[in-house]
Length: 284
Image: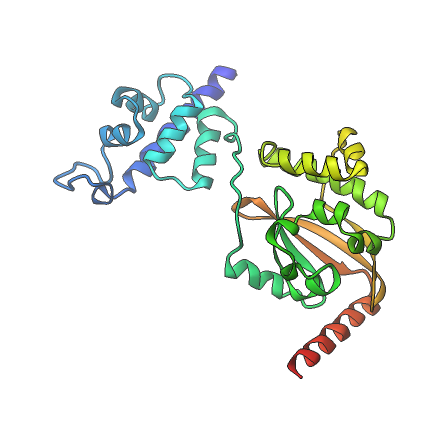
């Protein structure tokens, strides 16, 4: 059965490679179009771009030669100019598993994603990275959570705010429980995104400045950041209960969106009224 499954994967990989190769324009890659028996690049040209032997690449297209290494698949992905989604599919066909994740920091989000956040009028919504840096937010989040625009970029990290900002701490009805949950979910997110090296400096910094963080980090607990409830004490609105849900951003495994919905209609009305008052005051 294992041999049959491996044979089926090899044939699927070969078919996928042939299809992707046929879709490429030789002129785009600097090859003379000339007279070609079939559309797309030749096998030898893909092998040249991928820095592998033409014989080995031919075998892969023919479903022969065994499973390729991750290095070979990465080279082919580069040679064929595959998108990240296409590269992941290539690995599933070639090795039966996705590629190892490599974290790439980002500085912002697309205008389209920002418009998604802005569509939530009474629901605070944020976009965070795998290292829990907040890179986008809507007006409701700035009003109810904190005004991230007034913080330096390195100060918009959820862990730094939770363990180093007295106002954020005071706003949590049960800071100890929330903080422990945040640390566990942060650990899981960073590991999932392959960002363990990127969080080393932050963990060392917080371990020096916060004994509470250091103790929670040593516990090695992990948590799933899916959904739950949060109770906040706002200086003007008073106690607000929120239901939060976390969502993956399609095509961006390094980003996550968190939406905080008011748990009651009365809470939503209070948020909307206060946002309207803020807009009126700003316009005046």
